[in-house]
Image (cartoon, rainbow, N blue to C red):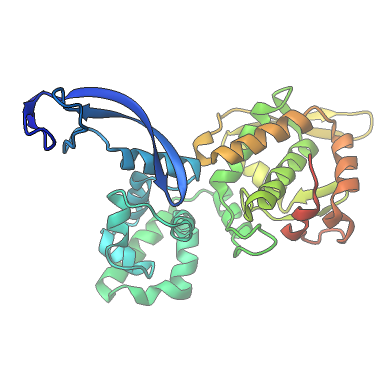
Length: 337
């Protein structure tokens, strides 16, 4: 390593690299980071050296994004590049300041609202919906023509099962979705995580649906937002994911899970096991902790026991008719799992 001038003692020194843990404040939250800190070998002062790895603030932002499940700069860039737009027109398209996307891609920390929008428009079907509704006039005519051609190309790559998901789960965030748009990424990885963490590494349909319900509703109770954006309705055996058969068929067709029909004395059951591994990076630390607790306490219970539990505990099921959506406002009345 080359010598540098220490601003404290005024001597040329070859810095000593010390690995240290420190706390950095990010949006009022203390974030722990471990970084290499160059020190002057003459006086011990900390030195600032441009280009020598990530600084503590960059590392803190990385950790904050991970803890809060925010998109990384590279992920934001990938979303923009999918639509073949440079940063300025992409910012204009979304109705933001011209330099907003550029700053995010260079490491600036996006707010939660912008993060949710970016995740939403990552799906071409969602982009098409809001583009035609209110974003079209944000682009110049020349930009609009190229963007629309590329959007049509992306939509043509969607398989039939994805189209069903996008058709049936394309709804605006409200009290029935837990104040967030539906996220197929969160939903499929939550299903995979629940199955993986289950006692027998497999779950029947009723067990899986009940674990999804508690994951979403308790996350809403804790944070004011659901985990997946799924809607739940009144089913005969308690709360169920609205259109859950389409969601499970989608995952089976895309070889994420395997479904086996298990015959009983009366009727049959659908048992699910994992083919794919869950990507747990899509969850915040608090979300992962919640799901682990739910799996530990609920997956040992039978389908009948879980149905009886929701019949007793979920006031939203008691207050609704068959097929009626259950508002997340009832989450406050779920005491525990």
